Image (cartoon, rainbow, N blue to C red):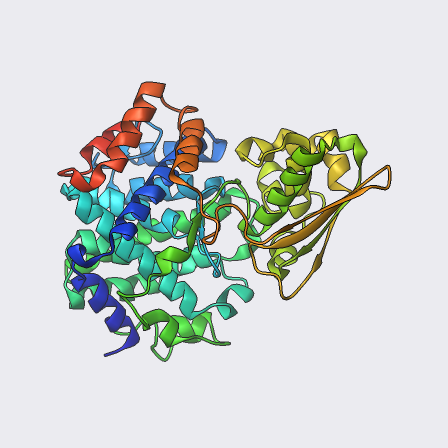
Length: 445
């Protein structure tokens, strides 16, 4: 059996009742999180542009767009919701691949489930299996693929979207293999667009393409028999420097990559999160004011300089990929929410002044969620801290109560407080719901 067919067989045939209970709970947590960040992101100008594009398409009203009054086709709803889920970079991250699995998978599953009346429990299971497929594809090409410049959320995410949607459509092994085979030819997204609206289009297109691939496969459309391992397949073309079939298939159904996924406490690139933890800790412990700072110095994982070395970001979205801005905003505001990454905060003279005093050096032994950081004051006093595991990482996960606080803070920006609470309750009870209609009804304006 080929690598792709082996993956397809597992996703198509896994028994929902055999999934570990914690995976279904984690699916709920990721849904709470994606609804929160999507509701908040719905006010962005880029979101408005995409929503109005979908509205002008005048497609059949079969699925809901989060934070809007729009109902449109499942494909269009999935695309817009995928964009909303990732725009603020406030979604989630799989360690160590830095894949964001929720943004390309949940919108595909949700749109398909809303259109077809799928039960809440089966919807949760479809997300679990789709996200696991995306994470395992990402692991199979880590680190070679990302190092080439591919954005793994778009490239691996499309496989997860197809797998999750295919599960909702109840594809058999042959059909699932074709769905994944179709999806793989849409794998795309390059890191050059980080810091712009185009980054969030990677999961948006992955969602829509993955959902379409599943629907086409259900109707007899064909794709490659082994899109992952074929002679000109995903591994050979998009990761020519290496791949690992064992990472894709070893222990599937027994060992869960979903357990290596973490929800974000900060709305920016995850490799800066330990820096923000460290700066906020020292700020609060020692009452450090911006004018007191002579320098902020950090020892970091190599990805920090690879992904986030932008000393002078020009706009808010670029600030999300500037470790210098992340540290400065954390020092000045004591936070790293989306508000810290507006155009105004990037241009703020106080933040800019601190930002110019931030530097980092690479320590190859540092993990992605680890940092050693010191703040030197103008008085000559030095305060230092070591963060072993950043908040939100798998070893230091966000608690349910912290997640709820994040959700309420963001969801209240878009919908009434009573609706915020009703939606939260609907997600926590989704495994007992006959369908996703209540969630879909409450996540819109």
